[in-house]
Length: 345
Image 1 (cartoon, helix red, strand yellow):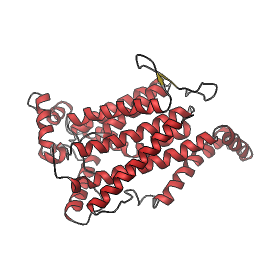
Image 2: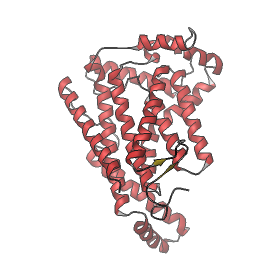
Image 3: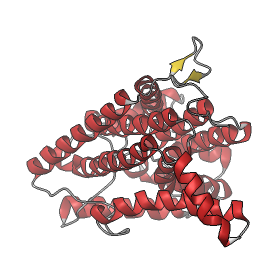
Image 4: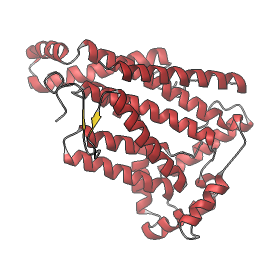
């Protein structure tokens, strides 16, 4: 039923792995697991993630519904396993987690290899475009003057840094708990496309971002978690370029924070009924965009490209997973009926 979606996901992962392997060979660097210190190597972490998703769905739910009565828990767990963890669900979770993980790890490696592959930089051109768009002003300076450089810096930093753990959380939520399986395929396929297109954009137009290239524009900002993150990224980049560092994560165009943030908001808009949750994700997207400019992570063009990546990925993932969009694009309908696979409420 979802052959197009999982085929696209698997092919995407395979092509990213091939690209990363060829690039690693050409620059004389090994492919690494960037998050290897967390839960061990991939061969350990992937089963933990899969079984962890299963555990989180079965056990807390059983405890809640049984109201702590231990005798009822096995029955509730068996019922959930029989009704929710079908062969199609297990395929979605296993294939989704493995393929997304491969794509994300390849993305991190290819991003790290970028300064070793090309020394071209287009920061000057994008900075000039920023000033043209803001009538000879720096966008970040305008934001600092309007929003201030203290309290707002802490608020925006919190939302920006929240993105990092949310990447894995959001994939897990849609794979495990989307009551309509097509929505799970839609989400993970779109995510894979977005991270791949983002990687391509890094190589098409290499930049390091205004916060690193024009760092004096951001020295009046309050010290936040984002300040520490920027410092660690600069340090890692220097180690890769001039020492024995293994990985760096500096690349500006396009903004995948913007792209993935918009992709989350679109998925929630099209698949979740709760108006409050929809509003929350649109607010999150808006704050991410502001933060990218405010802290100097990205140029205006980076955010525009991020939006384009999200829209393309969202649409292609929808087509692959069998969504049928209304003419005006305000809603979508899965190819399966709600009697076969209940729609999220």
